[in-house]
Amino acid sequence: MRKFFYMFIWYLFVMCKFFVLIWHHLLPKNNKVGLYLTKKAENFLFFSPRVYKVARMKKELKEVYKPVRLFTKDLVKLHAGYLPPKDSNTVVLFFHGQSENITKWQDTFLFLKKLGVGALFLSYRGHLKSAGRPSEEGIYIDAETAMQYLLEQGFKPENIILWGRSLGSSPAIQTALKYNVKALILESPIENIRQAALSIFSRYIKLFKILVLKRFIKWLIESADFVQKFANDETIKEVKCPILIMHAKNDEKIFYEQALSLAEKNPNAKLILEENGSHDKADWCYPHAEKFMESLR
Image 1 (cartoon, rainbow, N blue to C red):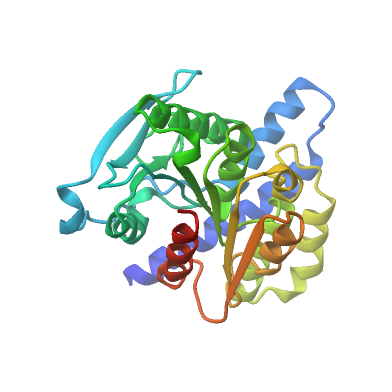
Image 2: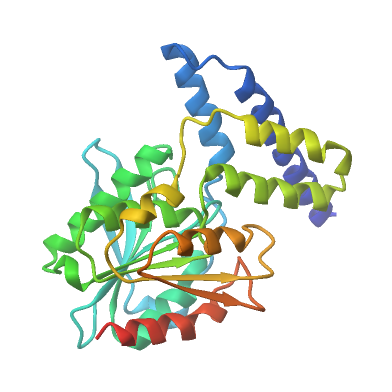
């Protein structure tokens, strides 16, 4: 009964996104009120913060996980989890994906702990233990704030690795444009928000068996005038550091062709396409990440 209830709530949530997508089309983009409402609609479409669904902290992390409070330039209080490096001057700045929070990726935290490198897992505004409401501009400010924290801890940009997964690939790439970082790791990245939306809504159509709406929804997304772009396909061209792009071919949330497109746009990118993986698990990508990080030494 409880499972049915949660499925019903999730169905309503998806239908709300569908109707907001239609509303987004009707909003004027040529005045301040219309632009404001457009951004609000897009924030609902693009972000689904997991504030309450928190995974219990694993025993192996309790002794080393250090909660950190950060304050952005627009006075938003953020939460992050910090792991000091062990016998290393390298630290990884991790950006999670849409509809996630940092407690979901404790295995990635432990993976980095095993390698002896430091880590800072950022919780965007509006997400777990962080104030404010998320937006594209907002999470870029959050990423900049996390980067400044690491610099204040004494880390040099050339010893910082940026790791962005899914939607988190956007703040990771934006940060790589501003700093001479050691490397950039993109796990199951998005090409841009339009292609990401096409992937996600294709999954919704398949799950709810509403094939009759497939063409209409595709038209809505392809013709939408999105104000927030998350245009990784444009920004990745300017990244100068080594790049590792990893994607599972059977990823049903974000199609792997988006990773392929990103890799083609930067000669510094190394592409790994895993035959069997998952968008919601990362164990398949750890061996590739470890090998890549070893090659940077």
